[in-house]
Length: 372
Ligand SMILES: Cc1ncc(C[n+]2csc(CCOP(=O)(O)OP(=O)(O)O)c2C)c(N)n1
Image (cartoon, protein in one colour):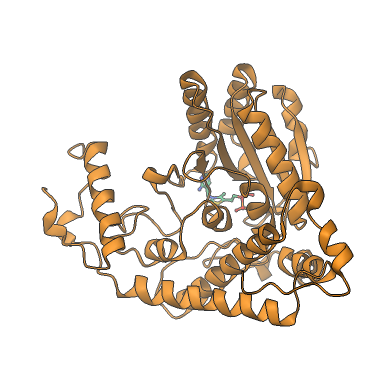
């Protein structure tokens, strides 16, 4: 990509970085670009929220390295992703566009996640094998487990991956899902993004053990702890877990130790419960500068290259914001669509198809095209 520069003195180490993982220079720069775009999208959401343009933000800042690294080896549109509310980096890695993310934030009529029906942050695109985020935390574990069970029965070779916070891993659903997957050796990868807080509750009051990954042993699956700020290690454990699932060896529980660089959400004030020193020191666990330094050290990125990636990311976000904001709201006449039992899934598919056509054409979706 344009942002790459021919390595000079550091050429030797340039060949080394990622080589043991089979990652090319383009792969590494693409991973950094995905992280940079996601961060830019996330930061813009906060600005839009504070400007009164979008009602709610739940942020993934600090989680991007784990999400991009682990999701990168997935087969887009073939495997299944069952995200949670902080999964923007994983979703963008899996092919959801910043425009589509912003449509959900602005709750526009052509939002592929829910047609502007759901609370922002509930991303999903059925036709691309991205299941909707669930509001009740941990239910997604069961959904992913069911999808993996179907993939196994049908022998499709698909892998399901799902994400959850460490606090939510104390819900019964988590244990039910892992137990079932362990018994049936299902092709599923469970990713716990442990940022140390469940809103205002610290890890020490959420779990009797320091590592959620330990729980894998109770369900006969590997439990792997990885530093979520180390993108390449995240790639390694993600790739191994996905390969293991695809080859029929069964599920893996990955715990990525990450940091939450923001408040829980735009409705939360973390200064009320989080020590200032902790918030300051956690900035050192930001995966973006860490990966950038690795790339620079390997001679794959220089100042100009980084500036290009950041400028491109800003452009993508400008485009996504302006475009999504300019789209029409859902037609109020369709407010009850999908609320009552008059709209079976086939109708949803039809609506999504029209939404996709619209996005390709750049025209406007006429809600009256609907037959309800
Ligand atoms: C079943 C259920 N209980 C409570 C909530 C409210 N809630 C939303 S996010 C959250 C905290 C989850 O913390 P954690 O799983 O650690 O994930 P994090 O937000 O830190 O990424 C809670 C309690 C909910 N959405 N669903």
